[in-house]
Length: 355
Ligand code: PHE
Image 1 (cartoon, rainbow, N blue to C red):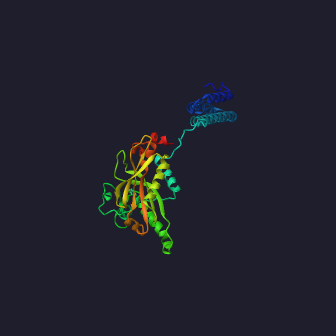
Image 2 (image 1 turned 135 degrees about the vertical axis):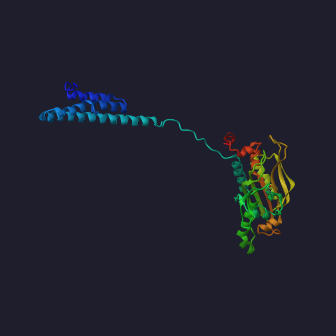
Image 3 (image 1 turned 90 degrees about the horizontal axis):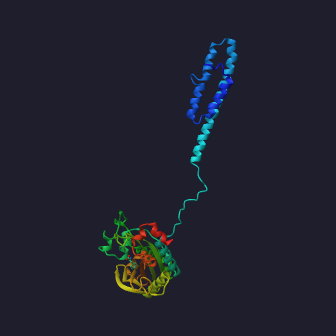
């Protein structure tokens, strides 16, 4: 060892230089070992103190210790610097570039069926109709019995109606409503109850004028049938309501919805248990891509006396007209869509065309 030849100050500045030059913590620890390790240069000097006479030992010891403190402080400074550099490197790596343009989230738009229902609601509202909504899970009485469906009517069968694995108070399975017609019953019953007192006092009950849009469910699926689709039920009930009123209301709807006068409306005799007489409503445009074709858009009829009785009203006094509009059908005709399934696939390439 020729460190005696090196003044302590040189060892310190060598250590400082080596530490400063160490690019990584691992290399710094290697450099540390060369000075402060078991046989490091400073450690050797400390060991050598033992051989000195007592008075020299004191003075030399103080110097060596001083040098050791300086080397340790250089070491710690470099450790801190390397740790800071590492932290900065990580922060840099994770840095957000706030000047990058944001990812576009795309503006949503209303589904064509929702737009259709909104427009039909506005048209009926302008003709003094209330708008009501009701449950999609119905009792057997509401979906069938109150609507004059015989016990063995095919609509009740499992092939047509979805049943829910829960029974109602009468011990009958609940169903996913296969049409919006239960809303005739719910709304008219509530209306009758609301005015019962006034009627008992000799006043005339205000007419029922309501539409009830919503989802309905049937076991059916092809290009023109979906297991879930939308109807808009309508009910107009009063002492002086006639089929003529239904015709006027329906023609107004078609005129305003399709924004044309160039069409015909046809009432084609049909059958529903809850109306008598009953009619399918067909429309035919005089121009446009569908010109000349009769298109079925709704079922309708005069509310059956048994049903008026189930409303809690007197069929001798109240005559009603009901209709059930195929809302999806209206949307398809309006937008020129030929496959109902497109409506419910949720494919944005299709839906964004209505934005
Ligand atoms: N509920 C019938 C259907 O779903 C439509 C309808 C409603 C018919 C009201 C007459 C009166 O087919």
